[in-house]
Image (cartoon, rainbow, N blue to C red; front, side, top):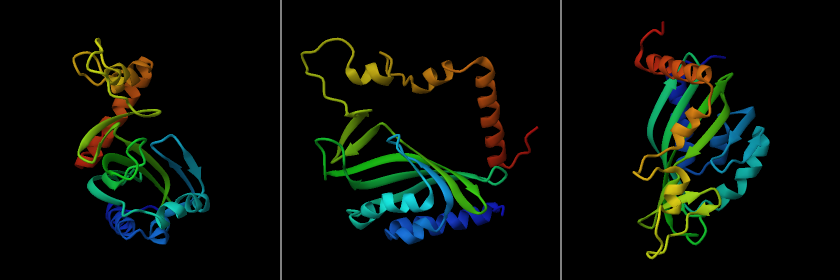
Amino acid sequence: MVLSREDIKKALTRWNLAWSKHDLDGVMELFHDEVLFDNWTGGQVKGKENLRKAWTSWFANHGGFRFAEEETFIDEEEQKALYRWQLDWPSFERDYEGRPEMRRGVDVLHFRDGKIIQKLTYSKTTVEIDGEMVRLSAGGKVPKRPDSQKGPSLEHDLIFSEDGVDLTLIRWMLSMTPTERLQTLQQNIRSIMRLRGDKPT
């Protein structure tokens, strides 16, 4: 079963509504039995029933979390969608537990047989908690540098150059071979052309 662009759009509209209602059954309805969920924490869950079990406690004690759609891109030919969202919820970050947090991220959604077979979730590494911008590291929030400490901050050591340039994407591209870089760029160009309605050459 191949979904049209309109089919995917309608399915995601129903899905977003289920998230807003904290309706776990409604959310699970769009998932393929063999779904793979890859969370921004690095954790993975395989299989629809395993994912339901993993989320049951969260939905039962949801604390009023809310996902707001910011933008959605749909690639009908590839049966994929990119869903950009804002999440408002009680923070789980160390030293900020329970305080209102806002974070932004994206879901890369792959469809098979009319259902989501992969949900790959990515989150920004800077979140807003109770009005304060907090940059996170792999082990939690980055500790604040004492004013007396000199030299580049730990935050900049992680992913930024001294002049404030985010090096994450640059380092990722440099880790590839020239052939891999070219293939990645060509794939992105083709996806952009399809989203614009152009015919890739």
